[in-house]
Length: 70
Image (cartoon, rainbow, N blue to C red; front, top):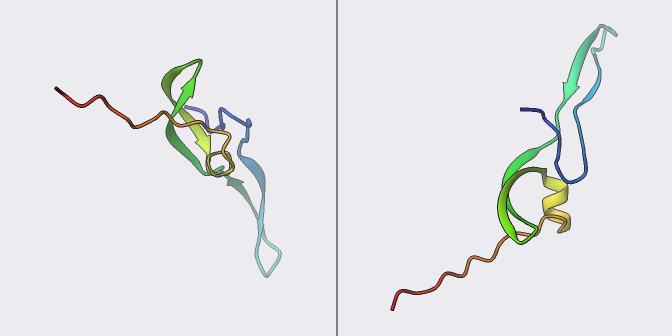
């Protein structure tokens, strides 16, 4: 499973951790992905979205209303 946001396409960023002695070790910063139920083409589906997309409102969540039994 890839670590990519299905809304904005945000991916891991590669770089170096640099110590005080200027030693460099490779590091990978992953996006904060969450599994979220979302409405796509009128159907609720599960997607992996980053938290910035969820907070900004780009993810439309399905309504929680249910029909009460009679």
